[in-house]
Every structure is written in structure tokens, then in C-alpha cells.
Length: 164
Ligand code: ADP
Image 1 (cartoon, rainbow, N blue to C red):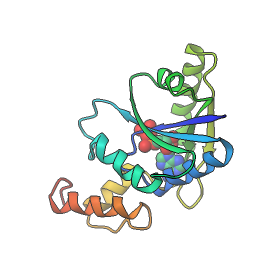
Image 2 (cartoon, rainbow, N blue to C red):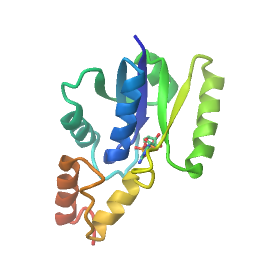
Image 3 (cartoon, protein in one colour):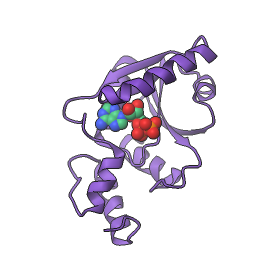
Image 4 (cartoon, rainbow, N blue to C red):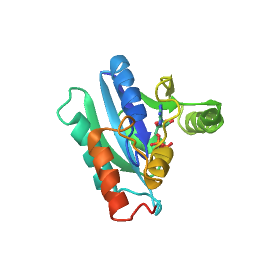
């Protein structure tokens, strides 16, 4: 049984992430979507909220599991018994950081394998950060995120968590 770990901040999850998950699931028997818990005070959504959105999309779906993890990714990969870590590549700008991470992780753990999936052209320009910026400026992001996320973003904007 081949398991992939797809780690990220998912603050919040976008259709670009979902595309990577479903494509990874076509290759691996099981995909663990791993929400990284770090001390990022600038995160808009709590870990619980981020997991809730992912579970709303994937709850009960065969072979897709939502988890969270702290600390080093290489330890999480081992703990989850994942064969590989999956990352999405949107642009050349993603490449340098991802390349460095993959090399470092393999240096520290010889069994660490990273699998890169190229972003679909439909979503290559979608990032959680840009989604938040668009909502902040009063724009509509419904076509880029699951409905539950669009609603939650709107709530945040109304409550002025995202300032206009
Ligand atoms: P991180 O903070 O680890 O970059 P993100 O939630 O921003 O976390 O992204 C998690 C993973 O999803 C990364 O590998 C990122 O490149 C990928 N990703 C994000 N948005 C997209 C997208 N629109 N298309 C494809 N991959 C994406």
C-alpha cells in the first residue's frame, strides 16, 4: 500500500490544492493531507478550521485522510509511513525553494522521496494568499475555492478579520 503525504498550510484550501490531491490519489493508494501546525500568527484560519474545510470536502472519501502535524516534515513522513511527499509546482518561482527542501530532506533522510505534480493551467495562478487578498478587496473567489471556504472567507470579511 503506497501512501503519499501532501503537506501544506492550507490557509485556506483552494481548488488548486484539491486538484493536486485528486491527481496524487490516482497514483497512490492513500493520500494524507497534512495540515502543518506552526506558530504562524498571521494565519487567517485556525488548524481546526482548516481541517474542517478539508474534511467537508473529503470526509468519508476512500483513500484520502486529513491530519495535522508539528515539527519536521521528515518526521511526519516517517510517522505517517508515507512512501513519498507530494508537492505542487505552480511556477518557476516555486521551484527553487521546493528543490532546496527536497534535497535537504533527502540529505537528512535517505528514504525521503518528493514527488512533484505540475499545477493544472486552470489553477496555476491560484494561491491561498491571493485568495485572501481578493476577498479583502471585496472580490468574488467562488470559482477558486470549495463553497464552505468561500462562505467562511465572507464571514471573516464581514467580521472585519479581513479588513477592507
Ligand atoms: P506551504 O505553506 O507549504 O506552501 P500551501 O498550502 O501554500 O502550503 O501549499 C501546499 C502545497 O500545495 C505546496 O506544494 C504548493 O505548491 C501546492 N499548491 C498550492 N496552490 C496550488 C495550486 N494552485 N496548484 C497546484 N499546487 C498548489
